[in-house]
Structure formats: structure tokens, C-alpha cells
Image 1 (cartoon, rainbow, N blue to C red):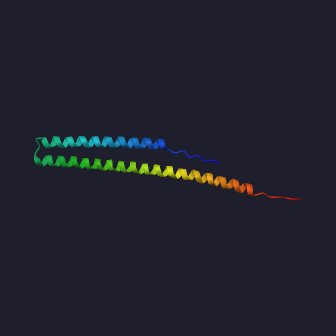
Image 2 (image 1 turned 30 degrees about the horizontal axis):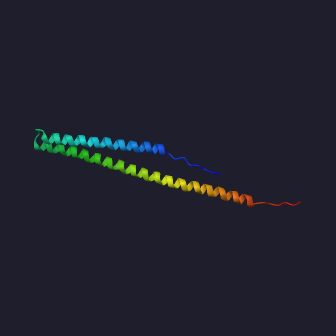
Image 3 (image 1 turned 135 degrees about the vertical axis):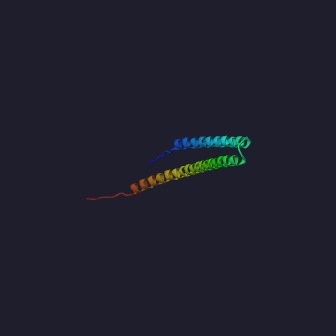
Length: 116
């Protein structure tokens, strides 16, 4: 008796590429915010207004960087889970095969002889 396992590699791949795309979008947002900071530094606003606007933009950048870090961590955990699933699936298959073999052996050894 052989038991095969089916993994969900496709959904993991889709999730991984989606994560990568999300990271790219977040990085583009950071670039745009950095350009806004440069524009603000060159603006004719008062020093106090410039300072407040730049601080706000920098806070937004920090939040985006945290989101990127979180997405990277999620992707890493997902990769580790896939590796663990792959290795545990392989050992589960061998366990099923070993159990199947030993039950066949025990079935052949259980012979009962009846005499009338």
C-alpha cells in the first residue's frame, strides 16, 4: 500500500510572488515620499512648516519600511514552513510504507490450523 502526498506548492508560489509585488509597491511609495521631502526642502514654506511636513513624510516612510520588513519576515516564515512540510511529507510517506510492509508480514504469519 503506497500513499502519495499532494502539496500546495502553487498557492505558496502565488503568495510568494504577491508578497514580492507588495514589497516593490511599498518601495515605490518610499521613493515618492523621499522626492516629496526633497521638494519640501526646496519649497518657500517657513522653516517650522518645512520641519513639520518633513517629519510627517519621514514617519510615513518609517511605517512603510516596517511593512516591508514584516512582509519579508512573512515570506521567510512561509519558505521555512514549505521546507518543513516537504521534509515531513517525505518522512510520513516512508512511515506509511513501513507500516504497510510490517502489517503484510504479520498477516502472513498468523496461520491457524483447525483439525476436526
